[in-house]
Length: 319
Ligand SMILES: [Zn+2]
Ligand SMILES: [Zn+2]
Image (cartoon, rainbow, N blue to C red):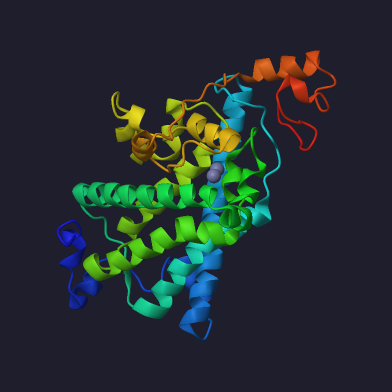
């Protein structure tokens, strides 16, 4: 492990002044949280404020994809729901950001380094993280579906959205589930980075951001489109022909929500291929013109369940 983080691990504590350091996190937020008396309170407050960033990221993806869809550039498996469940999504974000910031403030107490590591360090550590988290997620997710008690307690709420989804559905879930499935792997990774390569935010940020990107786009309800790379440039290497057939797509996760017995993975299809739980998406994705015509031709669409296979009456739609 040490060689992966070679760039940052060579920085001795006496050299901290020579690199760009952030004493207790990002400067703007730190100015506010440093007013609090204890590291625990500072960690919690820092996490609460930092959690606004993933919310803005989700809103940006929602708005940009919606505009592209309404301009006819993207296709959807089902119509676009407008409900965004902000409070439940924010609770979800807190469940994985707060534990890491508390760890950072209470346990390590040291300066967080923001020096840009080598390309190799970022690539290897991000791929390492994705392999680790993907395996953990597949096993945990499959277990949540296999065990009735855990399914009811932790995962059933997330599956209330069985057909039409938008990016915010990823956060429509139990807080504890998100801590176990996303918070725990990232906290584990934070501890690993702390012990083997100093607290380098440039190493920690890509794994978290690619997890956020993958899960947000995975629940977007749009057919995968190459333009999604604009939201996360690190996915570009995974788009090369040959690689892409090993990556899970929004269509794959759409299958998981409507069938529940398939496609348990997070990033890759390999565990689903390996355990025989992979199922290809067979629903046609349609553009906005189709859905608008559908509404015009079916004035009773809100109550006519037969037309789309599920009840459209329960939400507001952004056809
Ligand atoms: Zn889901
Ligand atoms: Zn599930």
